[in-house]
Length: 72
Image 1 (cartoon, rainbow, N blue to C red):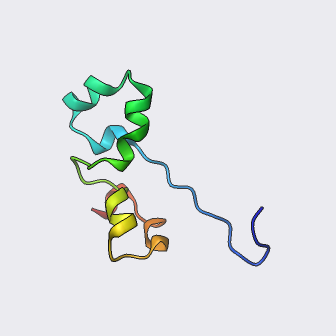
Image 2 (spheres, rainbow, N blue to C red):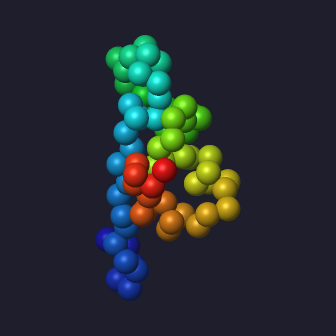
């Protein structure tokens, strides 16, 4: 799929549970749609995914493919 000369896309798995305080995650974890859209809301804890930084920050998108939780 895509262009033959382009590299294959890298998938980034987002762990919403690791982006939030445990008590807050426990409040929303049964609401699938709320958890689903949490990735665009502000992260409470450092994580390897920050939607705002990715879309409005100074780093190129390709840099985010190599981020890991240990990067922070």
